[in-house]
Length: 230
Image (tube, rainbow, N blue to C red; front, side):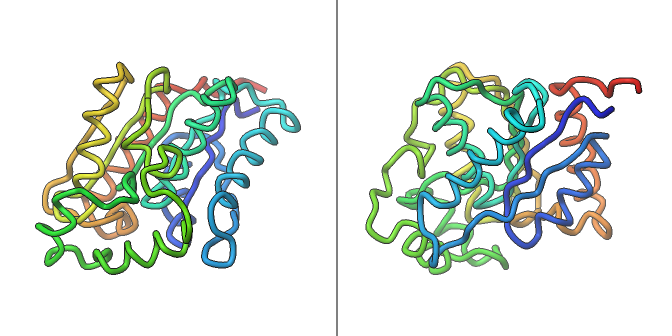
């Protein structure tokens, strides 16, 4: 019997990264098909994420310490939103969370949104504006549930952040890591030089992608229980 699982939170590219992470961490993965904006704006995705987390505990008999969260880009935001919602409701946290290029500031105040815009082939300031308007059409961009950079992160479980040095969301990761450290959250941050947004997708053809998956898998294994013998 496998003694742990991680809940993968992302959209199209997640199936590739999630399968690679599952192999690297030697554990199961639950990849959820959560509702998407604009048809289903906030808090639909958050509700689906929380439902999946609670299903693992209540129906599949996983202990929270046997569960990790992993998300890239908007999925990284969702992983943080889930943990902050659990904190608000005084519910138990997962063992840890892996955040790959997380979007943490819906107010879009990071300097790298402008300074690195010409280098990022995936994400642009214009695209982020569309994302925010779709996900949060009438909401508050400073709401800490959707913009975790403004949240009290204290008591959150260990976090690992991977981000590329040439993506406009670089400052979202740097600022989150600084805030987490100030709130006494165990935090590891790695900035991958010359890498772009969600470069782990290219792991089959990119050495840094494979290395990032391997290091992320080691992080998950460190914080999740070992596989139990049958």
